[in-house]
Image 1 (cartoon, one colour):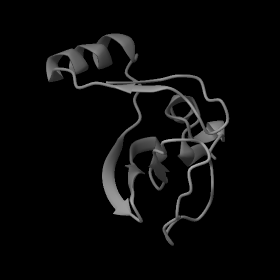
Image 2 (cartoon, helix red, strand yellow):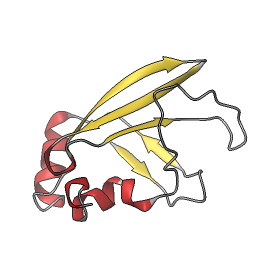
Image 3 (tube, helix red, strand yellow):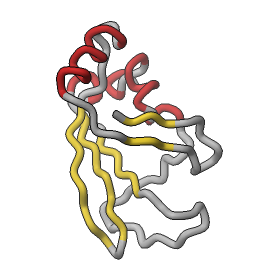
Length: 106
């Protein structure tokens, strides 16, 4: 389970904990009104950082988003050559937005 705080520029609080599968299924069934964002996450190491690359399906088919966790907002990071556009702070890419405004409708 991941709980994310409000964005403050490129920074936000994030808490991530493993939960039992049965709990996850119950949460999805009871709290998500049948809506979800479908994606597969891959971890890719590059220049001393681990990138989380999400490949979306369903209503967000075709969208690929890469994210890197930094220790501080001013930490230097070498972008992989497969990064095309910086979207930090663009609310269209938030999972909460992709439910009501999927990529297929952009």
